[in-house]
Length: 83
Image 1 (cartoon, rainbow, N blue to C red):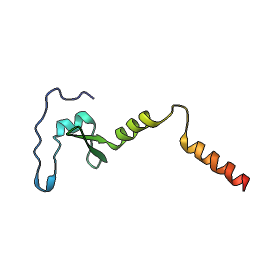
Image 2: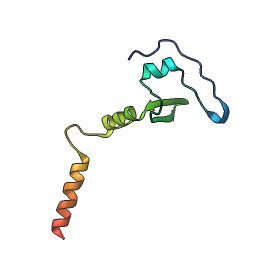
Image 3: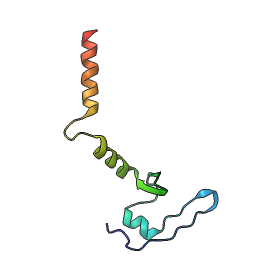
């Protein structure tokens, strides 16, 4: 999905609403009803799909080939056996 090369202007509407232009949504793969995540960073507004945010956080904090959920379950089972 190629991203647009030129910036687009977006106006802040009533009650702080933003409307993302259709071509920008298409370039980003956003569809009506998608869950988006917004955050402020260095004076900028960053909007990304929920899936993109989860993937980014997993890459940052996750350990390849290791499931923290599985480790937690194994720990709890070990503790239950000790009791």
